[in-house]
Length: 271
DNA sequence: ACAGTAACCTGTTTGC
DNA sequence: TGCAAACAGGTTACTG
Image 1 (cartoon, chains in turn orange, cyan, red):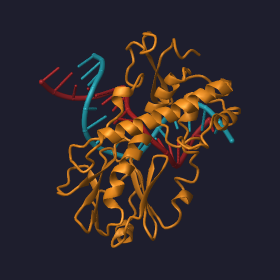
Image 2 (cartoon, helix red, strand yellow):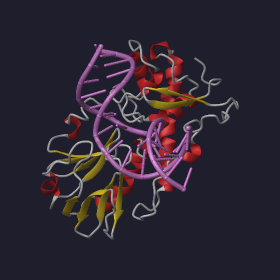
Image 3 (spheres, chains in turn yellow, cyan, purple):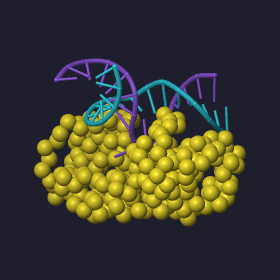
Image 4 (cartoon, protein in one colour):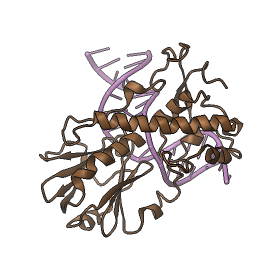
């Protein structure tokens, strides 16, 4: 589920329903996620209020007067609003507000996390080393080009490195490389400035498109049926191995790079 | 400093 | 059909 566009869609979806509402209760049914949910979470949040909901990379930051709830959705996490609170198997956390609205965290694989910090979340161990935001101006062709000069890794692993740029996951890395006509296996230091211009541009375009698509698919965030859209109609290569390239009809090829599947067009994205 | 791999989990798909 | 293996949108920690 959660790549950056899904996280952003979640942020926009939950924010209007939860800010400025007093938190009545916090129920933690399963604290064993990627990192254990701190035992203090409930007491920190109770009678408190979320003032704003921000995002840093794929982390959601729910700010209160006294600290910030940091949420990462991992591979299978989601946040949903519900009124009727009959929890299912993987509904690990409920945050219940005074008006009986319930913000529910669901995560079958439990790779996500809910953490608390009383300081600025940007100084938190998990966030302090994050790279630039891909949708901000600081993620520029020259930024990536300069970093790439002394790297010997592939271009795909460069753009998926969260210490360099925060929040480009496997789907959008594949899609952006296809759009920019760059081979995923190409050594980062061997791309020229023009290729970095194209790549950063396409990363931004694709993420923005996906956020738009998520926003329209996910109209009714409070409904049980409202499932986040995965931008799937607009994908060109991800999950399409052995199908014809949408640009040149060459059969798309899949390989494995650092345990993740890479799909690309050997014709349009030559080494 | 860097690159590659294992690890954290469960549900679904694939292959024999 | 049944069962086991492989695989899945992420990220850190460890190894060499």
